[in-house]
Image (cartoon, rainbow, N blue to C red; front, side, top):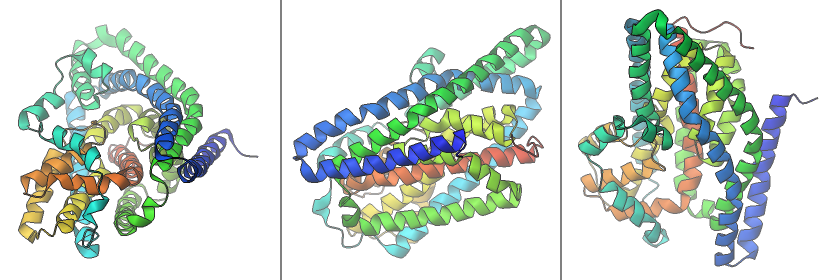
Amino acid sequence: MISKRHQLTVLIILGMLLGIALGEYVFLNSEKAEALVFADRIKLFTTIFLRLVQMIIAPLVFSTLVSGIAKMGDLKAVGRVGGKSMLWFISASLISLLLGLMLVNLFKPGVGVNLGEGDVAGAKDFISNSKGFSLQGFIEHVFPKSVIEAMATNEILQLVIFSIFFGVALTAIGEKAAPLTRALDTIGHVCLKMVGYIMWVAPFGVFGGVAAIVAKKGLGVLTVYGKYLGSFYLGLGVLWLVLLLAGFLILRKRLKSLLARIQQPLIIAFSTTSSEAVFPKLTEELERFGCKPKIVSFVLPLGYSFNLDGSMMYMTFASIFIAQAYGIPLDTGTQITMLLVLMLTSKGIAGVPRASLVVVTATCAMFDIPAEGIALILPIDHFCDMGRSMTNVLGNALATSAVSKWENALDHTDE
């Protein structure tokens, strides 16, 4: 007898397989215009699912983070947890960037690429968005001018900033704030209860998203970009080994239990190309795994802005790939400089849809690599996004669990 939790996992996988089959059938048996119409309509399933998830992200982040800070009791604890989190984030980001740099130089997937294969029309939007990238834009993105606006647009980093100030102020008030703290704690639990209902829509969202992209591109695009896609996924495999090794050194035998807990978020992130879509479910599963709510509510939102391991690796991989395709030689010093630039600039637009491509486009322009080269990776980007979204989820689950262990805030047995 399949348990209720495993039933949902089976349905999600079934939805993905049916989506692939239907999408490929439409691609092979329809005109391009018809396939595009079909893709737009079938993707409505995904839109519904993502919107249901997005509607609870803001109240969940705010309520759990504020109550979590209040439960920590003092600023020293907040600073300590924040410091340990940033130590993991920076280390993981550097490793991800370096791996991408080494593997793209080893496999050279850009050498000999047919420049005519690119999606030039689709690249124009990313080139336009990248021109607005600046220090001022970074600051404006980090600090909210209105918490209502931040909630309305699901700017997680801005919500974190406001929630930290609110939580610290709530703690400073003392006993008077106790009723509000309890109320926010209750709101957080209500949001997590809603997650359980929304997740049953996930198989339909997965089905619609996969069917839409396969109907538009066809599975044949995987062979055209086989070397690029294969090299990138091999890189993700190496990154997973590094992350899981670090996780094992900290969590030991409990790593297996963690992976079992987060299998649904991993599959959903992979098939919907959205790590944001699994934020509420990941919060729930990490608490069930044994991480204290006060740690999960603090570390996980930060991780969604600063700890996107899959995206980090992809950015160096894609940038050097474009240079290789255009035959532009980059010495080691230039590549290291590019890595450091990516390390900084990638934090400026966290939460922006397909932010990796915007950062890659802006970085290419800085190093005199044709920004139009982004067109070369657009046809296959959705399939790369599946892998990097899933990797982002794994990285944040491990980061939250590791900080919980370091803080002695990880229960020995999960429910």
